[in-house]
Every structure is written in structure tokens, then in C-alpha cells.
Image (tube, rainbow over all chains, first blue to last red; front, top):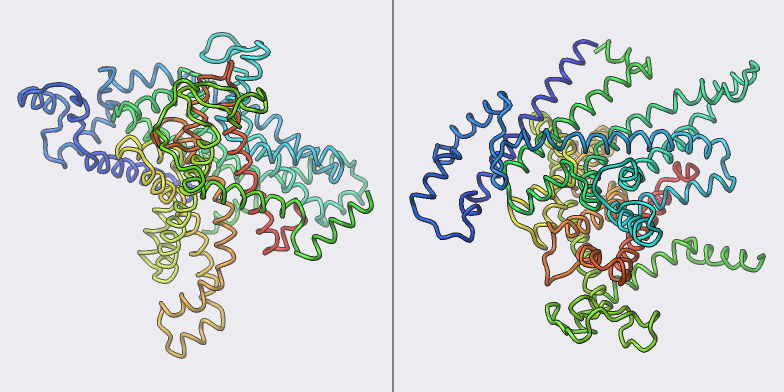
Length: 310
Length: 290
């Protein structure tokens, strides 16, 4: 098990390093940032040189690479071109808003999605089951930003019940959270249903019933625990999707989080913000996948055993 | 009720396709067909404006209006714009899919047939790309290489290829062991010949299913990037551009954003339901899992 954790951890570090190097090289090949900063201004040779020097762009490529990599370990992610402030400072200001939105949406998705799937599987073929399938179809056909716009239209403009954007009170959380949760929620519900239906036909459940175990206990103790493994796997993918979705939802609702910062950064060609923003997200997603991989072991002893043998 | 049911059954027996899927297929072909003929049916300059006819209501709300779906803030006919937008979105999704499929297949064949270090490297590359949410690859490319029609096509290829690579690699590893591949190798067939004659035809159906099912996510990626202003740039238009333009007029001219939204959702619904159906057809094991 220890060996497994170690090899996986090394792979995560290696992936992050690889992505960082790729981002670094691609950004250097895509053109000179100085040209973008001075896009519409009259500039002299001296001005360009001073700016290049202050951004460290006059050094040879390998030197820039080493500098940015060592800077990364010191927690220095350069200055935003647009705000003229350290990128880390900008991120620190906004990360709270994004995390609270994402965590809320994930919680909502799990708390509603899993019970919805269980009920649909237990009442297979009934109207409730069909309604659940219908909702899940809507969940993966209506894109995040369209759902957001529709909610704003309905609840903010027509009914005037909820604020259309920004933060402040708990009311501001409702629409962005629901919009963000919709995709993962329906995916989790659909998967829980399928996984549970797969397990329900198994012999060991009949065995448990024959022993006289209560039907509820059969579902929750014997079936659900086995059905949850594929659900947890998909949840890792959902976190991936949630991170991508958060960027869009934040934009639709003018939410002052990282997503708006990164998109605005991309529109203004604020390179450091986009570079380090993406790096941070890759690190986050890699760690989540790592954690999910480890959690299989505790959910399914068979996986744990097979790892020990290797 | 009974005659209705019998009719449904008749359609199914005659074509082998359930009526609901048939309906989705026909409407999809209709929408795509009309939108691709748009430059011939309604030749227009997408940048041309007509400020006298700005923000007119669609004719289903105001019968005196000559415009079927109304006009936008600079007086352009929304019907024409929706057709051009659909055309752009579908075109990008399809070309992106072809790129992803071609590149993914080549990488998958390389990984599966060469094995060793090549396999290790390609698998690592695929895993790495999977760790970055698609949206961010799009944002990154738009930021550093500019945005436009071809950029999104490339973004789709970059975010989509590894699905096919992984699928093909695992299939090749399985097929490699089979008797008939062994036979053909014993008769002196080269690696390329085995791939082209035996392995690819065997996987064609799997690849088609995967591609159809991914098509909806490509439509989504294109529209989202365009909505965020990182994709198609005006005066060109796509469904994402239309929704983002219409968003500012939600209070009074709601149709400007809602009509393109409905069309986009319908496109995604058609593609994904047909994709599911094709998968179930080719893999009967999944049929009863819903």
C-alpha cells in the first residue's frame, strides 16, 4: 500500500511539472507579452527594454524557466500585467468565494443526487423513475450558462425573488449553486441508479433476503456499499467538471471568484494570471483524483488486497 | 391508444428505429441541412446593420412584424443569424471531431502497436491532458494564440483526442492476442497491414459510437467559449455568440437569448440521445440498464 501511494504521488508531481513546463514553453512561443502590454501606445526602445528587464524577459529562455520554477517554490507567481499586483495576492482574495460556491454545489449534488438515484432504482419502472430519467436528460442537455440565464430570467427579472448576481447575502448563493450543481447532480443520480440496479440482481442479496434481513438493510448495507464504488469514481470526474463549470457560472452571475479573474485575464491577455490559474487548477484536480484513488481501498477490500500484492 | 401503439410498432418494425429516435434524427438533419444551405437561401452580410428595424418583436408575438424571430439591437434579422450561427456551431463540432478522431486514432495505434517507451509516453500524455479540465485548455489557447474558427477546432481536437487513444490502445492490446491476428502475422503481414485490415475495421463501430457521443460535448465547448468571448468573434456568429449578445436584452427582448438557447439545447439533446441509442444498438448488454 505504501509503495502504491508513493508511486501515485510521484506521478502527480511529475504531471504537474510536465503541465507547468508545457504552459511555460507554449506561452513563450506564442509571442512577446511586451507587445501586448504596449499594444496601443507609442513606445521608445528604452521603454520596451526597461519593461523587459523588469519582467525578466531579457534573460535566455533556460534562465527564465529556472527563475520561474524557483519562484514557484518560494510562492512567487509574478505580477499581474493588468493589476500590477502579485498574482498570489489576487488569488488569495478570490479563492474563498470560489471554494464556497464549489463546495456548496458539490454538497448539493451529492445530498440530492444519491438519494434520487437510490429511490429511482428501488422504484424501477414507476412514474417516479421515469421522472428522474427525464430530469437527468435535462441535466446533461442544458448547458451551465444557458441554465444560469434561464434562472436569472425567471427568478430575478420576472418574479424578482432572487438577486441576479454578485455576492452578499445567502440569497446570492442560491442560483449560482443550483446552476453549478445541476450537471454533477444528474450524473450522480443516474450513476447511482445504474450501479444499484447492477448490484440488486446479485445472488448475495437474495441470500441476505433469504436469511431474513430487512429489505431496507439489504439495500443500504449490502447493496449500496458495493454500488458506491463506481459512483465515487465518477465523482472524481465530476469535480473536474465542477471546476470547469465554476468558471462559467461565476461569469454568468458576476461572482467575484477565481473563474471571473481567469476569464477576464484571458480576455485582457494577462498572461501570469492565466498561467498560474491553470497551474493551480491542475494541481487541485490531480490531488482530488489521487485522494479518490486512495479511497477505493477503504471502500473495496478486494482493491486493497490487489494493491498489496503488487 | 391501441391504434397509436400499433402504429409506433409498425414504424419500429419497418425501419428498426424507435419513432422518438427517428423524429430526433429527421429534425437534426432538417436543422443542419437548412442551416448549411443558409448562405444560398439567405445570402447576407453578417456585419450589415439596419438601425431603423432594431429590436423588432418576432411575428409570433406581434403579427405585424415582418421578421419571423424579430431583429437584434442593430436591426439584423434573428432568423438569418440563428441559421448562420447553427451552421458555424455544427461545422466546428464536426471538423473538430474529425481532427480529434484522426489524431487520437494515430496515437492509439502507435501506443498499442509499438508498446514499450512509446506506449508509456503516449499514455502519460493522455493522462496529463485528462487532468486539465477541457474549459481551461480552451481558455489557455484563446488567451495565448488568439481566438477564431480554427482555434476552436484545434481546441476540440486537443481536448478530445485522448478518449479515442485510450479506447484504441486497450482494444489493440486485447486483439493482439487473438488467433486471427497471430495467423496473419505468421503469414508475414506487416504491422501497418494488420492495423488497416484487421484492427481498424474491428473497432470502427466502437469509434463511431464514441464520436457520436462526444459530439454533444464539442457543441457545448464551442458555444461556451464563444459565449465567454473567447471563441468566434463578431461579425461572425455562433450560437454562443448569439446567447451572449441577447443576454443584455433579457428584460424586454427575451427572445434574443432564449431562441438560440432552445436551438442549442435541442441540438445537444438530439445528438446525445441518438448517440445513446447507437451505443445500445451495438452493445446489447447495456440495453436494459437505462
